[in-house]
Image 1: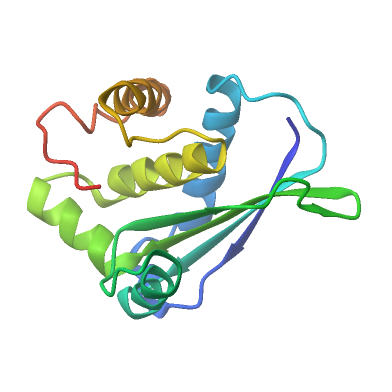
Image 2: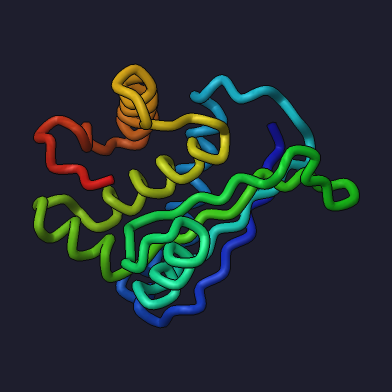
Amino acid sequence: MKLTLEISIPSALWRGLPRARAIARETIAACVDDAEIPSREGASVSLCLSDNARVRELNARWRGMDKPTNVLSFPAAPGGSLGETFMLGDIAVAYETMANEAETSGVVLADHYRHLVAHGFLHLMGYDHQTHEEAGRMEALETRILARLGVADPYADGHVEE
């Protein structure tokens, strides 16, 4: 799959992770390679590297939860074509929540970010974790993708927050 990744960084907090763009591109490329995603030329994903305030607004508006979260995914409606581009959806990551989770769990910030990007992207591809079976399948895929990128299993110690 040839995928275009559009990255916006409206929050200056992301200066705390200088390679954020490159890490996202590497992670999504690994997801595409490993996730058995049907080939579709011209696919596009939007990644917004934001802050707690903006992610809280999105979470309240679209999920009815008035609180920040680490990552949100918004799959495009079926047939989400923009001319030659097929929009897969949008991902938003909240810097403060991500950084706090990484610090609390003793995980390298870049590794936790990779996990959240992979997690968000897999949601766009239809993966979910509403049931134990779905969660097991998604977690195994995330773990395999992250291992290819040199990141330890984020579920090994049971400290991952969803």
